Image (cartoon, rainbow, N blue to C red; front, top):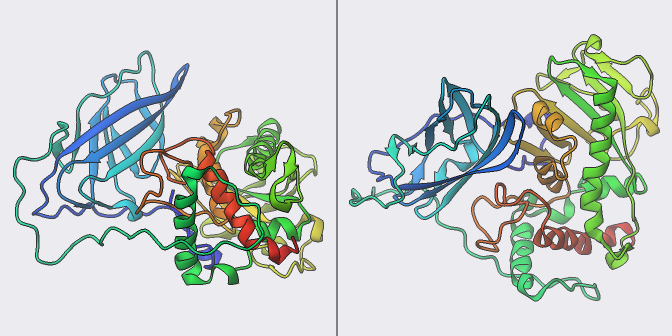
Length: 415
């Protein structure tokens, strides 16, 4: 669930690309795989797979395993590209997680279905080598030219704003300082404070409310009941991040909003017949294709009109949208930025009643500026939502990273 670079034009947003598996001739492979069913319901389940690299650094990887029961199928996955032939499953790296250091891990997950039984696979291989849980006994000489970048160093913490109410748990103070220093150095090429279209900017521009456009990037039909359930899930999941700014129902550090209303103002589809309702509760946009997907009118989009000038929007400013919920059939993992959040339509629909739609929550964190952590871990072994695959809900560390953004940006909103 790699964060897409949010300051680029929308046309550069793309799904995770499939890359060729590069297997250096010198790499000695050793691995250990942990497979766990995280959730199960009649006919379906969710699973987490963790691959520990016990050998040389990998520059491209392919994980293979075989389901024990013929009725087990992968429906959608994340952090890799999943394919299945019969009972055999292959997962290849995404573009952003091809390099895995010796001693590093790969975190994967997927939703699947089963017919009569759901036994766990027992045999796994990486790049054709069986994962026995042991390091390779020999390792060919390393090449003269390094093939993986050095491990990032821990950034030097910066001085926090004066006079703020900064009171995270003592065990999180140093990791949070390191994260913020890293953000200042890397976000938008070092222009963190110059960027003006964070979720924070959108929320305050609309005086504490958020509007959505749903980009229905699928050929499936949508009923009115599904539409309303999607709208309800958006409200509930969005509020989970907003609740991180409250202490006993009161805004932390001069935060002004207890409840953030979320409204879906538009749906974009290829064919009007896909939408099984006739009421006019939302604007409907048909055949407006961008990035090979339907989109709501750019004249109504905050991404395209950061000056809040929606004079060209057919419904006026009240029909503008701040984020797009881009639901793509067959899309594994997710993407997020100032334009909104993207994930699989099947995944989102199957989790409408879930307590935590964790891919959505992760990508919404990116909309508010929170980083990914594929190349370093500020809290080794703890796990948190923004470190993809290590948590399925907002943790205390995620909360305080979120608050850190607010305390650094709140002065731009007069708080």
